[in-house]
Image (cartoon, rainbow, N blue to C red):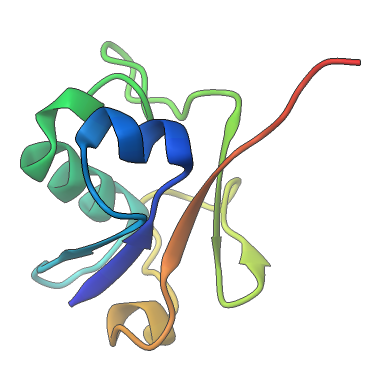
Length: 98
């Protein structure tokens, strides 16, 4: 069971709690988690990744186990603590402006 913590704007869009739980088969990668998340919550399609390219939206970041996973390969396996459900994968909405 993978635990994903969503930022408030995505949580409100999906009408869900801050933490969602997903069941995935191996290999558990960021892409696999995002695909499962979009399958369960189709209203999130295009909000985390671009519809056409699949690229991460610029103001979203991914964290787990006190690591910034944002710029790692989305096809790399997630940390074991995330895969086992001990630690959540956090999707964080960045704040821009000045």
